[in-house]
Amino acid sequence: MPRILREVGGLVIAEDGPLVIVVDRGNGPPAIAAFVTGVIALVFGGFGAVSLIANGCAWLGVAFVAAGVVAAVVTSATVRHIRRKRSIPVDQYRPVAVFDRAARTFRDADGTVVAPLDAVTFHRQMQVGSSSPKLIAQTPSGAYVLLRGNPFTGGPFTGGLGDLDTVLAAAVAA
Picture (cartoon, rainbow, N blue to C red):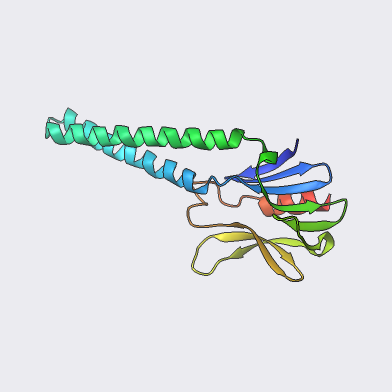
């Protein structure tokens, strides 16, 4: 059973003996949906409650509260979905990359050797057309993208990249 070294958003860095495994649980879109529907629930529910308390238009207040409740139900279901995905063991996911410290190789998701481990470095790199960086494994033959950030993977949504590059470099070097 792999031991999780770090998890940020849906990206997991785990250690299984000599293997360092990078897994993407794919929580980005559900995290965005949960945040957006949560905000909608608060806004619509709040406006509806204020309208009802202030003796405003009753039907409009009820409609806003109803929309807020529906958004809250969607938020709750989405959060449960994310928790279910997090409860699935890491070894049940297809890895994005595998760093074999015993064989000193970097393999991609298909198991193809990409580069010798000693020739791999990890970096954040800005993306064209985005304000968020991506996490890459730099090899002599080019950059291999481990996680492609987007404006929604940072901030309130999934935690950005955090210190994944540092943790991954330390784990692979160990």
